[in-house]
Length: 110
Image: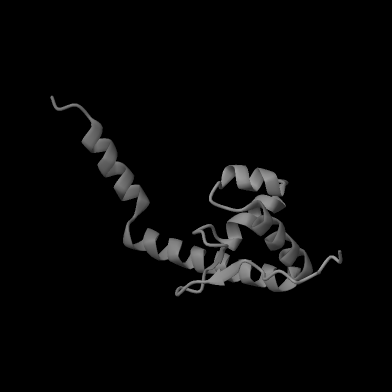
């Protein structure tokens, strides 16, 4: 019997918003790679995100290691987008003013 070696497709899909997701889940590439960079093994990542398949996590990590520069560029772009959105939201909804309103609402009426 001969072992047939075939290439497995990378389980990454880009959604309509340009976000890369792993497998058939809503877990983002960002999440898997950041968790991996923080020292988690593939098994630990699946434990934290049980909708992921172990083989998909290993393939995603392998893709990252083989395309590190491209993935880092994508992750930096996503980080910059998140910062921009955060600043827009903070300008629109002043966190200090909201905090003050919440504090006032929690004070007992006298």
